[in-house]
Image (tube, rainbow, N blue to C red):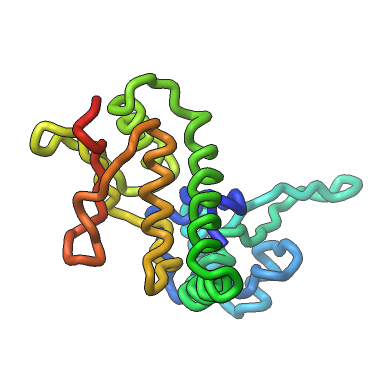
Length: 224
């Protein structure tokens, strides 16, 4: 349901854009055995130069991986290319906006608000475990700063800034945006997850869905 729960790396899709020509190669590689440049040339009818340029862009964006294949005997080794998990997400990003809210609705219909709350809390704590093991600071303030750095390492647009005498975590990008449902359950997950990681309650002081540029959080009671 959530990318981190399936161990998909946010950094695979960070700072990436795909041209129409690149998308043609993505669609060719997804679900097929690894292919050589020559095989892609035959399948698409474009030149070697064009294929290699597109592959370079796709590998830089994390959508394609290259592996060296050594041939038996004295044959010259060559490279084969395969699509990554990020390529699958790229193809079906719009479907997440349909499926995830449907899953939240199914959970609510199966167990009501009580089950929804238990599921959200469980998800928040599972996500928190992903970050807690990478943060060594003791104070909530320092832990919030370190969490900002960890999120940036994963490709997120996040910053910890001083505002009105307190430290505010500004999340300019959101890995959960396609998972938003009518009740904004995933937003509650995000808030609780951050609270668990820093070891102190945080409160939301900016909300993207209420007209702010981004969602932002600060330590409750200004604790440092």
